[in-house]
Length: 102
Image (cartoon, rainbow, N blue to C red; front, top):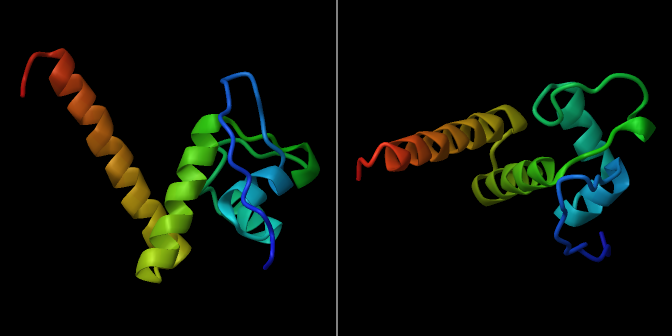
């Protein structure tokens, strides 16, 4: 591949293009486009992929998807399921912590 990995911290108002997100995840832009079109990334993706913009939360999710796919040789559906479940566990732990439950 030979691409440098983009290492950056995004603030909520900042947004990445398809190419920037792909570079940050060390994947091809087609990888990003495919996952957006299947609904795994970016909740509302209308129009041409040139107009799509990704937030820091999208970047975190995309990196997790990449890691699961690479580490476990998982397909995109399995990786999405694992990431969805881990995000739900994280949300539930926050709720439990806020409720004072350890």
